[in-house]
Amino acid sequence: MGMKSIIFPSNRKIIGQLSAGEEVAISGIIYTARDEAHRRLFNTYIDCRKFPNYLKESCIFYAGPAFYPDGSLSAIGPTTAARMDEYAPSFYEAGVLATIGKGPRDFSIVEACKKTVSVYLITYGGAASYLTRFVKSIELVDFDELGPEAIYRLEVEDFPAVVGIDSRGNYLDGAVTR
Amino acid sequence: MVKNAYQIFKKEVIKANTVLPQPVRNLLNRAIEEEDNKDAIKRLKILIENALIAEEEKRPICQDTGIVNVFVFLPEGVCLPEGFYGTLNMSIYDAYKESGFRFSTVNPPIIDRRNDMTNKPAFLKIIDAGFSDVVRIVFMPKGAGSENASFIKMFKPTTSFDDLLEDLSKRIVEKARFSCPPVIAGISIGGTFDSAPLKAKLSLLEAGLYTSEIAKEIKERINKSGIGPFGLGGLTTALDVTVNLEPTHIASLPVAVSMSCHALRYSICEFKINEWQDLKFEVF
Image 1 (tube, one colour):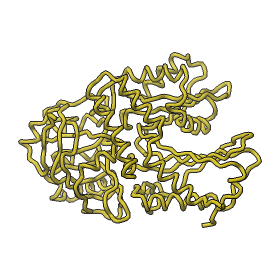
Image 2 (tube, rainbow over the protein chains, first blue to last red):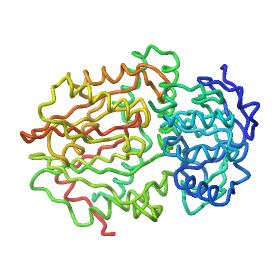
Image 3 (tube, rainbow over the protein chains, first blue to last red):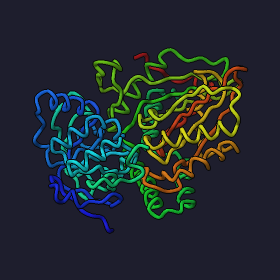
């Protein structure tokens, strides 16, 4: 297929080799976090420099999953990454190696990715039933009171994405706001 | 036989979230034929595959199962029975709870923003259907990605037609990038500050069914942007554009754009007036 495989947790040497425009297949462990979880993690990080260890060398998927009554996953897909722009540079600095979302982001994310050797990956917005096939398991980690906005640990296999912003300052047209 | 409104509404809410309407599928298939970018074709095919998986496995087409807009086209002389709104809300809650749809509403909208895990309330609009012998109810779940990309602008009434089309196309392109392209743009020109957004949203129901010269022109301009499916390049930035025109004030030119992603989800149920009057509504 010509897709490059990445397994999380990863390291900066591997992430540094990814190039904007390249299609990737993501496997391993990644974590969901979106608006409210970001606000909370950010406040803790700014106030007391604390950041969850599990997110270091890992990947944050901007997503809020839907569940069946038995707790199994019914659908998951990316949300608009731009809403997390004000928090993302700090999270990259704290050790997050990659974020997955949809849509263009502020130019400050290009600078943050370059500075910290990390990436922004774009996946298929609105194709939740399709994307759910690449998720092997899901488990609640933090902020359970937030429901779909809580942090979930996902085990993924060949989850498809495209490198939107790489670690060398290159980016796709669709990955950065004009 | 007395039919139960709760059961019917619940079925429609589930269908709306899991079965992509045929006109929207036709638009995707047409886009695949017209698209000249290989990667974009591959990505449009993912959207078709997504719709097939959703329907087969009864999964939501998109994880953002949104807020449920409900439009009731009510003929004159016919009324809304007691228990209607309660039945509607309960059918939405149960459909979401039982089908693995995401609870996406928070209340209050500021400060606490608490998700009470009900996905209530229904956003109900009653529309005068004039002289008709059918009550039509449309269920339209809509996600925030596209709702956040929707807008209204009060143009100067003297704006030239070309400037209007250019300004609108540019704005739609800019907003589409943050939504989930390929988009469907429902446009309403004229009316008032509050009528235009509603008419724009309703015009989405014409996508893939009916087009106009103005709509074609705007779609063409949008699709010159190169944004393409998922914003990753290609011809297909807009799958379709619909335009509604309304009379307006001499000093006004409101234009509203209700943006939808490719997952334009709706289901429609119709009742003859006698069926409607026999329909059983529970008072919840």
